[in-house]
Length: 112
Image 1 (tube, one colour):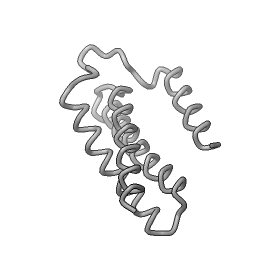
Image 2 (cartoon, rainbow, N blue to C red):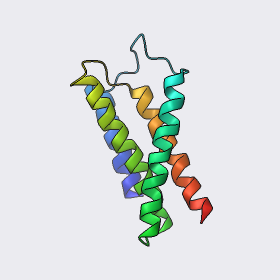
Image 3 (cartoon, rainbow, N blue to C red):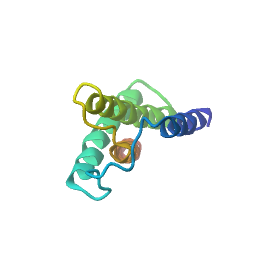
């Protein structure tokens, strides 16, 4: 439960800091790019959850490690988009990374 609070606090801090943009004119909620984020980071979340599960973690730990893997890698990818590539940090992409991580982690837990 404590990790959920930390995640919410981190998301709030990023949103208030101006790091995340939801208003970029070329960034749409419904786009092919969003499906790619959901699928790709869902697979990464599933991989993180599978590793955690294989190492004897509890279901809660497995879930949080899977979602954390997807979200962390998604945030790193958005940072690369913004800084070295001089594009923009897409909060919308990060939302789909997070959702993909949730679905991927839950699929691993259901397969057990």
